[in-house]
Image: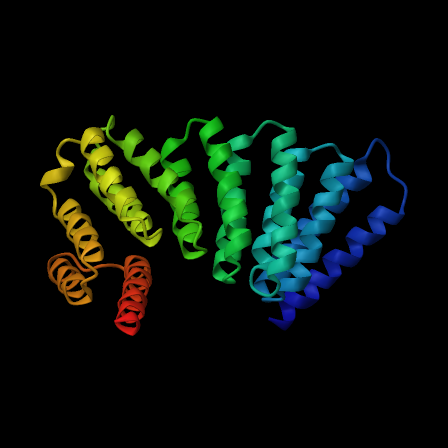
Length: 289
């Protein structure tokens, strides 16, 4: 470790010396770039992540002087991957720089990839609002490049988080749109009932029984096989329990479904919100009688 650190510092000093000297036709930037690259790699081997990150930024600046935007973008990505270990804000800043450069040189699929990575960093920090912003940007870029699978993965993240933030209509529109697209794809059509279930749960969260009944009719028109699924039955039975204001029935319907197809934490959280609203309504009516 100590050896690698000493090597890294030695390469860095040599690179700085090159930059402060004279060079013909940009040769000093090429020489410095080579030395900064070696320095950053040695800092990484020494697990000195902040120093590796800052050295990769110096490498990016050399590439920019040489008008090598692709190499500069890649250096910013390397900087971000070093900073990820210690400083999420710096990592995000470097990835944003890389995205801007990839956009300038028309590498939009690369830009999309790193926008998604920024979203994942924010997600890991539980910064859901910012994660949504970047998943939406990544989805747009992937769509422009016609990479629909990756676009839909990002959109599903947006829908998931929007529902957590109680932006139910936004989630509904995304899930319905993905279901519509998936129907025309033999590989994806088996996931349609799952997307429609997610959309339906968001409809239930809005607390409008007529809206969920209308939605179920629309989903049947969209996919005639949906009415024969357990997902459809779950939504219809929950809607009936809400209409009858029957908390006991609501609970047993969910338990029965969960015993056959375990509900993930996202669905459970949203269904608990629906149940809490139903309970509150029941208590309110008890108080009135």
